[in-house]
Length: 219
Image (cartoon, rainbow, N blue to C red):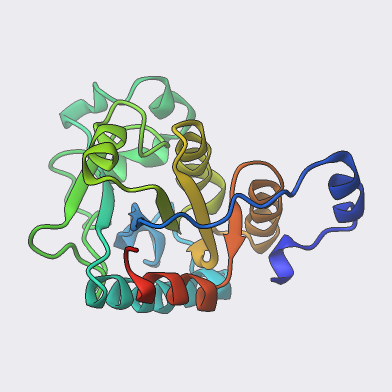
């Protein structure tokens, strides 16, 4: 994949980075923060200027359809804050754009994207910080579900995708990041984070590889 290439790749590999974790036997699909805020003109989080981010929506839809068909668990994350952003902490001081998820906000940026909505019975993790694991029950849920691998996609690559990927590895869930199913406002920042995740904390995989393993279901 082009986004895992870098002028220093040989140096990274020679130093011992870029090993492969490999797939486990019980994957789940994790879709991170997919909502209109990231693909809506006027939104402070809009990534639509990056064509690859726009294209990621269709990739996510194909991954989702495959996971559902193969009865692979599907997990969503959504962000939500109380009125006044009192539960946002220092994160809000750093990123004022977070108020798109404030309770009662009428701009509609937190609305779901058509075709990428949780179905009945699918887990929805509500979070307040970049990582899907921090301050949530995701790790416990994955343990109870007996999941060993997370197929990760969503937005943004440099923020919540990266943070969730790092924590997935720390909890010993194999993170398989589908690079073409992740979005960021900057192609350069997306590619830099994809390269770094592949080097240090995840296996970055193609859509085809992810589809193949999702189709196989649990073994």
